[in-house]
Length: 66
Image 1: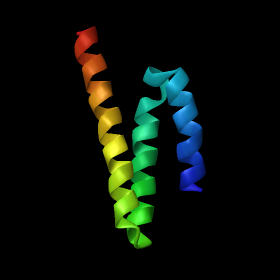
Image 2: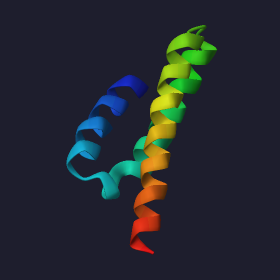
Image 3: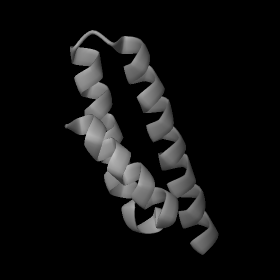
Image 4: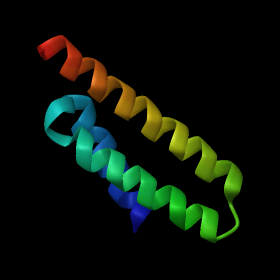
């Protein structure tokens, strides 16, 4: 399920952020969309906030590498 994939990516990202962060952000968005379509807008919003934090960290890391 999307939730299981999200849980797996969380572990991978905690150990290897740069390698898995892009896929993790995509998985979070997929999971949020599923939650939203199933009527769980509050949890979808929380998941999207987590995705935004991942994207922000990715951008900061790119800027540091530049």
